[in-house]
Length: 381
Image (cartoon, rainbow, N blue to C red):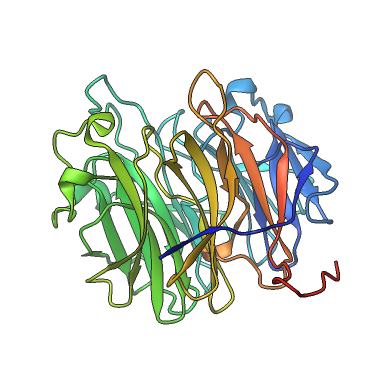
């Protein structure tokens, strides 16, 4: 069920930061080009802590679109992936970095949604890359999953998913903070989902849908689809999408709910998206609140921010970015991401980045107050 747009206090912050990360200490980390930056005041000001040009990185290596990420582990180790096939590690709060993992290809990366850790401190990193020919046939298979048991100093590479038929890359790698199960979603043609109950030693295939976003409540999961052609509903159980032209098939996106990892229920359906716009940014806050970014045509294509306060039973449209007259599609909003797809409940804001579909920062950071007064209530802020 969907509602109309609700009033939300939104501020524009004069910074262009790539997909910030927010931890339990409420520090924000992000990338400004090739500079690692940090904010202690919810994005109002940012301080540079490291310049990756000092390690030989060039302009083409800077994080953009869904490429690259920043992550701060529970133990305080900072990880940065650039768009150059490298993962970097800092053990001194971002003052210095060293490469800790070389990926399978120079054009591979780790995304904000394919890096996670469980309660034991095991780290999981899934590769993402997109080399393909004009028929969308992969030239390179990036479906390697890496695990580390020593805070990223050493990594083990698994080829299980490639051997199981995954054809391209990972869309999501995320640990459930309530059960410690690890969930993996893959694409693009074979859209699959896997679960591990033993810290990544073994995996079982679950569901039959293609997902990009995943977030957790106690007792269930929210899932954001990797766009569904209307003529392919319900999704094929083998997870294989055949003979697709997404522009011709009028794809849609949905938010699903699952409690048993075998069946799903649709909670919200977005309208036709003329550009392929999967739901990646999906996060929970506390016991019942969740936010996600999606795009749809109403009638112009808009990037939208949605909120639920009842575990997904009803959704409110908080903000819609008006369609822009840009040369390659509309503005894409991106949520500042948190550990295990959760945003700390004590964080009073959602920080949202703006990029175009080429990955260029095209607008200031947006800061949304998570709470606002109901009609007739006094606004104390």
